[in-house]
Image (tube, rainbow, N blue to C red):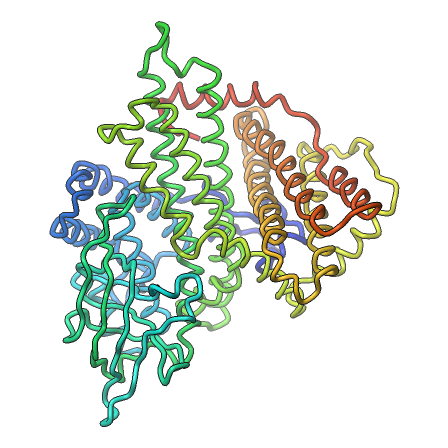
Length: 598
């Protein structure tokens, strides 16, 4: 779907760090089809015409309204977009689902209800249900007659999901499991018809169950009074001797962790997509207000300080979009390849999500932090009115905050991205050791700061990016060598390395997108995209150097530290960019269009 290039090399998850990707083999948002655009427009019309006019009512927790809107979205096919047609869905690919969810991400609290139903509410059954379970539940989940919620978190187990205390004991007649426990922060908990619940059988076999929400013994706590996403139902769920038929065990007994963790891979990707949509909406609000607000007889959008904010929003959003759609292409390519070899498409999607779990974790962190940046600066652009609930900036600010906690905290995802990469290297799935050793040898050589003689338009950027990858290999390699098996306990160092990894993946995705666009339209027609790319990379290489400096300084000193710091400076070198001029040009485009329009 993404490209038709022959002899295409599809990278494994995490291999972007040690292998190059030709620009013509990357998927970009610029390539979405007319049909995909129509899917996105359907979602956009629904959000604009049905959700936004009711946004204040939704925020006051009118459950009947949310349920009605869920039903309307089902009638438009939005609840079952990614569910196979045999169960009443549309069976769209990842890229199309991304286009849809980007628009749905603009829906504030409703987006949370929608995402919980279509994501963690539906996917466990789609991926791990028996054929009977799929036939019993998926059609209802698609047509809206069944609403779903996901019960994993407990008072004593958040990030440590396997520390759950909920228990399930087989009844004497062997027909039911008797479920006891407490779950908290359950999105859609107040109106869900079914719960996916995780509990331990015999005290240690972590297992998933499909539980009828109307079962005797289930009770709900009061609605949580939350900081943001106030319109979504969030309640505690209590299970007191609830009888769950044995045929409602989801997946294999004792393998519930596979359901929980693998569904989160897709969930993390989708969260980034939703955050991307929210970022675009908030940026457009900021641009419009900056054009309307008059100070000193001119719109505040004419001031350099405001232009800087608007441009930086756009730069981060565009970079996030590049990384997101690149990953959509990776997922769809692997799914298509597996399906062509005979793998069931649903299973192929699950396999692909697991393969690119590193990229999904990166996107979750980056997308949620881009959204946080955008909504924070939107409040600042609005000034005093941004602090008022009468204007949209306040709601965006509040609603965004949860995304750094949802689907595993950003701290957990930072640790996971590096941890999973190291594990892949240890298993021989990704060769990090050979290039890491080469970097160590290069550190002892005389640096080459000569100009690149290539006539490639982006030669300097490619060279700088290749070197930035060396900075990560040097830092991570030294850390693993120093701490060996204890490396996983050095969380501060791992967090710094993760930040470097995120910057490299996003920077490369952005560069590849722009390079591909230039190859089609020419550099002159892509001047704005080139400005965005050069500005982002200029700042990214500085951030990579700072993160690397923090990491290596924590476990080195003397001559070794001096060599590594010198290496970091060498590996993050990039020619100076007039970012004042580039940001002004970027902002001027938004101001002229009165919205995010890149």
